[in-house]
Length: 182
Image 1 (tube, rainbow, N blue to C red):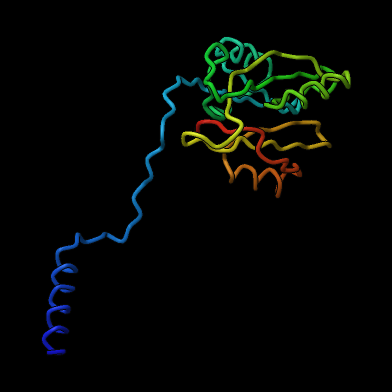
Image 2: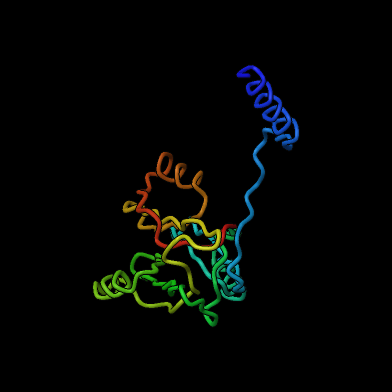
């Protein structure tokens, strides 16, 4: 009797195992959720003479920087436009220091206010909107700073973070916000 029960259980197991779909063993790409809000490119440029990275969503403004010794470096990320805010999004403030020739981004209003109160930076307004937490397939927007050349650098590319820290002497100050990937 025990042998008949064991044989029946083994037959049921084999039937289920053989009927199960085969897996390929390769990882399938994850689908990135979409919050449904339109995004715009956050353009990045670099000036070697000013040792400054600049970020803008305005192509005309970028063209002006490019005629003033900046070199286009492509799209840093995709953010929500300044005139379209998602319910959970926060402003990405842009500041500028003519003393240091430095553009600075922050999604933290307190950080913006403290930086402005020091007198070296002025407000350049809101570049767009970003997420304070990882939402809808967003990725971290990392802030790096080099106190020697007085430059703030922002990227979503972890390899750039490593290169700027290891090869160029920047400090990794962590994620300031979450944005749509490049």
